[in-house]
Image 1 (cartoon, rainbow, N blue to C red):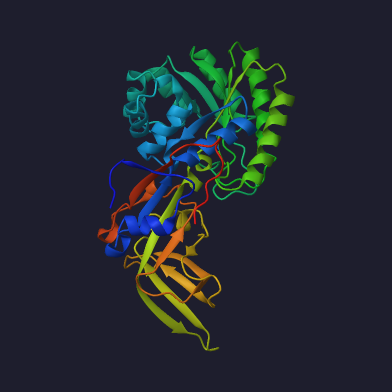
Image 2: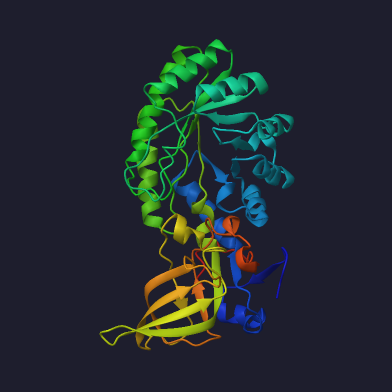
Length: 401
């Protein structure tokens, strides 16, 4: 099996059956990620088309695979880091510190000191306590006030943990910063992960504009608008609709075009680039009183390794098989390999009758999977096979079969 960061190449499309054969997956009980590096290029091209003028700062927390960092850096992306470890990872990939925003409103002192030592001067704040910390330990910072503007329909909302009230708290924080002679340069927000209430972006941008005016009135040079994340990783139509709302709102609120607009996409860039190949190692069947049968398959990955988002985000997995699609389907539950009863990857799925040694394929596995892997029960992170297109053809979408 290929290990490390070696890149193999394909011509037209990725053939999962061939990957299984070449990597000898029948002979191992290890699951395998297939990472399509060309998918990063395709996503970056789409971003440039739909979000022109909005600089992506990739949210490292979503997937900290060094191949993601290096590829996106080469494409021109900047980075959203939330800790000393993430800053170090990005700097070690030869990314200039000016391309990093320390987007964590509550920073440990050692992390703040590391940012200062390495020239990462732009960071977010959302409280007077953080302002006082910055004043004492890193007064040269460029500060971005993070406001709360939660979407009404999201997978995960951050508002309870991060973000100050735009009308009451944010002005007071800015006035404190002015009194302490700190430099406020902009406003940031995050409507939430997996945003489905798309007008939330317009609402947040409008509130940010009011604070831009307040900051300008009080002597700050307001130049940065950070519209956060929440962008889908495998739904082009939704992303296109979202981009139109964002562009219209920016044009209406900032017609003078004298600001820098950035975003913090994570899932958008990595979700569709990773496919996970798992093998069934055990099986059982249960019969219900009505006579129906549920098939239970036990695979070599689970919620304590790659499928943490099933628990954290209530994610409903997409699963494919390599058998004949015309075969009868049965009610199916997929279990992870550990002894914990919460290690359930999916239930009420419809799959054909499968046997031990058969493979299940999980697409769209690049977001919030790899960084959340644990070693519970002696299992650990799955291996990654990196594939790239031998000769790009304008970023046409690759198919996985």
